[in-house]
Image (cartoon, rainbow, N blue to C red):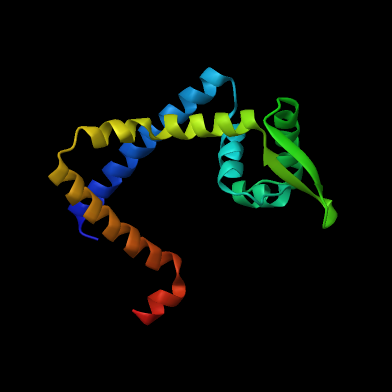
Length: 152
């Protein structure tokens, strides 16, 4: 990667993380939730079929740690936990209406600065940024798929 492009992308990533994570952390503090709680709520809102081991794998923690986190969220009325009818050893996790509301609000706050940024771009700038980002997304997808790399 050419040094100017690498620096530009790193600068963008740093700006994106600072603003996105900053808004997310502020929202968590205001609502009195931990970052793992909000992250779990958002993950559950985006994945209809999710269980304790799936969350553990997603966040790189033990099933016991996920269970402890979820117990508090069940008590707060954010998550409903029930037995899987196919396998009673597994628990099915579903957001409550309140849990879904908090997850949605968290995502809106996390992306708020991005909406503000898009609003100050001209239509031509939006088209240029869209094209460049689509190119990066397509190329990044190749890195995620080793099979497509060997075909290139």
